[in-house]
Image 1: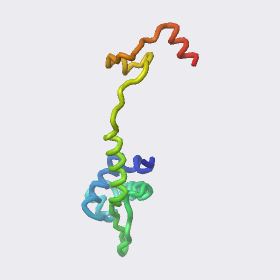
Image 2: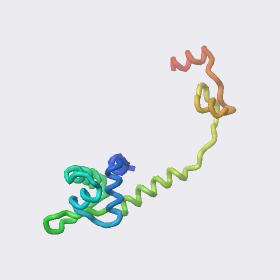
Image 3: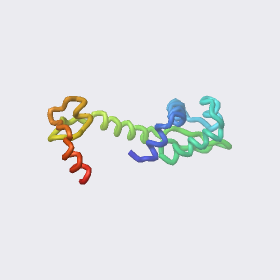
Image 4: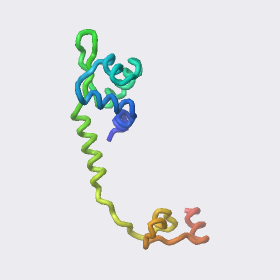
Length: 123
């Protein structure tokens, strides 16, 4: 997933704007009114969303109406679904000094001894 998409989508105010545009297209003034955010702030958020490819604008007279690019959002959802569905792998090998392994009482966990700590620090 592109860093611009992550930055754009996972900011609470921009996510609110995305949710609003899921219903229909809006001009900046309408988005400002519906979200309780100033028009300049909405414009800045829309710029980030446009650069990420999540929103597009269509000029209608004096106003530009912004709409959600559903295909781009579908791609994000598909990628997040892949991450969610990855099968977890069991521990393999010996993990020296792994705090997580110790916490879960992993059978492969071996606490570091004083000599092993020095060796690990030298590596």
